[in-house]
Length: 640
Image (cartoon, rainbow, N blue to C red; front, side, top):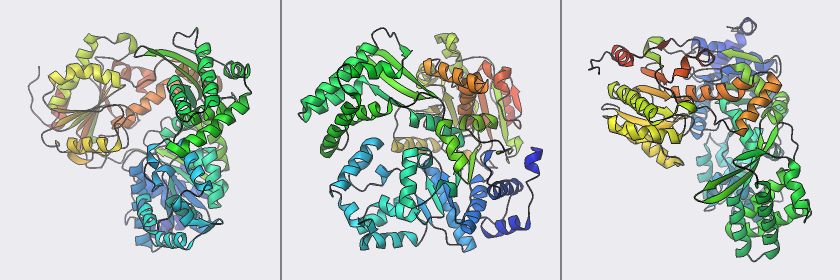
């Protein structure tokens, strides 16, 4: 343990009282004691924390308890940020246990995306940007009865206040708030904003804090301040990519063709002329592009300015989009307007790329402004907050997240070992194959399929196999499906929440006879699902889920090389290893679980990759994997 951090990890009288008062469980594990003390000391000293904490430690309770205690005593607000709706339930349950055990009244606002809160039919079926504009138009024109029933002259109506009083009686998840508000015919979002105004804890997605526009609107509505916020970021390894996606924007041939149809449908010839101009500009810019190339701000803006005033054109498109949204709630014309408004923004930490590719015989052009540096917004947010706690089971190396997100010097960084018995987990690397791009061929796919089928056929129970991409999954599954002796479930691109849930429930039914789930690293089943106990006995990570060697990846490597002299690791290697580790984490979920984690690729034995494995993992490198499976599970099998 880091000696500087260790000096802070004392259990004072106050800490012991904390554990007895707000900690939700009767017993405190030794690791939780260290975590409680670390978080408590950081909050007291207005410091920040980066914490690598594997599954099973109980980090939700160990972070919320000291954060909530300080917030209640010092008029602060705790923000628990997570991208997973399942994690919302865990936090809500933890807070209910605190309230029940300690008798401490806790006001909690569980906030999900505004469009998902809307009781009007269809609100959740459009993009977030379109919904915001649609909602704004409905409110301004007094067309939403839920809103008018809730507020009048910036004050709650009788119905709105009654709904708020009902919500405040106990801790409710967002779904519960929606039901209460529907009974009173009022807007759930407005009620939740009023609740957040006095909330001790706000549970929300990352963007409520890390999207500057939403953050500003949220704090103005809830009368809160970033400086009075204790921010807990769960699954923090996702934050850099989420921020980069949040700050990126794109325009495509598909959007333009749909916008032209919209303009024609609503009889707006002037707007059609504007959109046609944008289409011609994209074709002009892509004339000499074979696949993709870097462009500048002026390459787009100056071509528009040859015929039109750029700002006036963007404003006219947005005005037309408002008219469209009144008819169909969403607008592709609005997507063009938003793109034009964001495109001229500053260049530091961004690149601009134009792509041209043939899709089903037609040219598709995409012009995008892509963020490389999440610290552009995260560094200032972290600095202004009272305390920001970044935690995950895959925050290794922590120094990368400190650099990439802009955590200040003096940030506490601590790595906690897994609390699970080492004898219950075997981690193995089989260095026989590779998914390296230059080595991909049918023979390689056949060999991978053979090894994976030998593994899954030998494991007594369910196995999950994760591939770097859907394309590789399809290519290898072609051979695997003829070799597997077990029922196979295959993840499909674009599965919705219900499809994912149904497949998972069916898969779990095979825990005794054994089935195989084929998925993709960083997709639906590689993160955010729990298969404890006998539901999953083995996870196989096929290859390395490296970013495609495209222009954005190369620019990301170059950018981090210039900033931190570590571009290859920060921009390429470590994000892939994190995806692999997240997929591997599906196997061991509780202290009584027993399972194998197998990495199938020669590159995992290379020093620059091997060093990324957690220090407490005893990695076995072997090609005699069936013998190891038999030994680990105590089974007898016929070896080929």
